[in-house]
Amino acid sequence: MSSDETAAIDAFEQLGLTSYEAKVFIALRRLSAGTARDVADITDVPRSQVYSVAESLEDRGLLEVQQSNPIRYRPVSVEEARETLRSQFEREQERAFEYVEAVESEPEGEETQEDIWTVRGRDRVDDRTVDILSQAEHRIVFGTRLPELITPLIERTLAERAAAGVSVFVVSDRDAVREQFAAVDGVTIERPPAHRTDDQRSGRIVLVDDDSVLLSVRGGEDGETAIWSSGSLFASVLIQLIEASDEIHAE
Amino acid sequence: MSSDETAAIDAFEQLGLTSYEAKVFIALRRLSAGTARDVADITDVPRSQVYSVAESLEDRGLLEVQQSNPIRYRPVSVEEARETLRSQFEREQERAFEYVEAVESEPEGEETQEDIWTVRGRDRVDDRTVDILSQAEHRIVFGTRLPELITPLIERTLAERAAAGVSVFVVSDRDAVREQFAAVDGVTIERPPAHRTDDQRSGRIVLVDDDSVLLSVRGGEDGETAIWSSGSLFASVLIQLIEASDEIHAE
DNA sequence: GTCGCGTTTGTAGGATCGTAACAACAGCAT
DNA sequence: ATGCTGTTGTTACGATCCTACAAACGCGAC
Image (tube, rainbow over all chains, first blue to last red; front, side, top):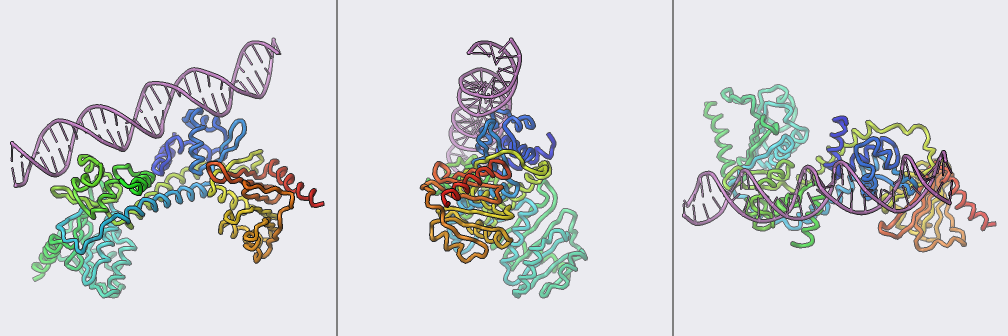
């Protein structure tokens, strides 16, 4: 069995099928249609198991059955299969979160807790970055050496906040980054102070309103890991530390 | 535990979480944030299990961790959770079907096989109906007593085929159905021949180009079940039988 | 010490995987 | 008709894996 195939079977399992179901469905798409024997011949699924597996695939709407002798099976088209799985997914998600939203408690005013949170994974850090940026009301400092860490959504959020009257400072020594924001109104571009070592591992720095801070590093298993804090004493202290060190050296 | 909650947990399981993962996530949304003990106190998840479950939830991007003593957990927002799950779903689906599309064999010209297929479930019958209708080139006969079996997509497909020059006949004794197509160009509306019993169980009849036929009945476990055939001798014979009986009685 | 935290290990149950046996039936030679 | 052969669809039964669940342990704080 090719490694591509095992990867595809894995993917189907993630979508909620069993490995037998995945194998039978793939085999039938290969054959366009066929009997239990046809399927068993080109997979390692025992023929006697094909019948029940096919039945459950029929329940999922992934194949159709011909009541004949021998029974023949016909998979639905790829588009139909994708659409069916997608709508099942959406339905389940609706069911799941409907309840969650019903029971979750109110944010009760302020999050005054002294919390520093950890976020692992590039995408998650992107999400949290946008989240923090979009809460800015007065001032944003956004720094990174790596242009690839500025997603379109982040760029848009920065521009949108700048347009809303927030003072936005983008800090980078990379021309690619600097040029990206050169044309955006309300965005000030700066170079990092010379003393900042900014070693290879550094990722991004986000400061918002003396209120929220996010700091990420690259490396480790997950590629990028960030810590952040919002509305906490930690956050304001960190921000002051980071900015104070600049000012002192700038004197 | 409320029945709503078990339903929500079921839904989360369908989305690929374990029941513990679902319970911990729900509990944390309830609490906004909390420790392993907080979670264990309001669920039946053993405290000792919360740590590993939370770790796997972190991997899925559904919560963030505060490395403190005690460890505190913070769930991501509902919107973020939904988006994360959705993008994971889309990614897996891409992986899965990429391979399927790569290996499936060509339709090799014609499907001359003598196949009658069975489709169970309202939605599946809808899909197959649209599929067959959209292959029409000359002539469509579409009959049903039940207006609710005419989805917007089916209605649109009929209108679209009519606009493409296909002769479309809609057959029904129900005014609701008849009025629905009264204004559509190229669609002829007819009453079924009086001798047709059309008992309570009948669902839809679709005839296309003397080539494809679909026949559904309502009742049984799945609500609606259809048989259909396309490009087979069966299909043309069935079509002729159905239509011939009309003409004979019409003489 | 006592208490709570976080970790580790072990067991029971359930679902899936994989093998095997079975009756029913069609084809074919005798 | 009889017997043989091969296939089909069904059912039963271990083996295996993962989750659910319980209990014990080391550790640090008080």
